[in-house]
Amino acid sequence: MGICGRLRRGDVADVAAGAARRLRDRDRRDPFSAGVFLEVVFDRLKLKWQDHVEIDQRFFRPAEVDLLIGDASKAKRQLGWTPKVKFERLAELMIEADLETGRARATQQRAGNKFG
Image 1: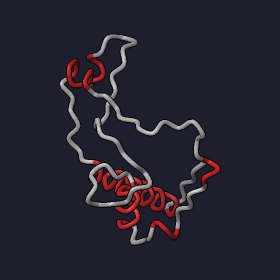
Image 2: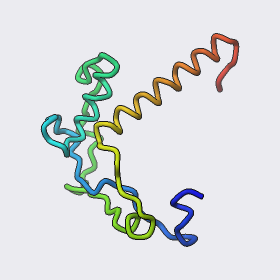
Image 3: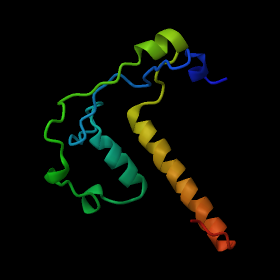
């Protein structure tokens, strides 16, 4: 049984790092910069994110909160869970998984399998 199976039925525990991320900040020295995510992913693909990402102010939420921070204290207290993967490593793991999925699909397509 996974750790979430230890919660009572209908109970919820947040899984979060408990740290703020600022998407527009791209300072690698700032551990709270979600813009680092863009750099890590696009660096792995040998691309410049600025050539492929467009920020359109029209899609910003007018009443967006300034700061969101997940609280995983319940997950720690009830499940013994704490975050062990740093944000930058998470970005690397995500892009590696996507690349592997793409490679597997390409192999299957070459073998004649179709995807819907």
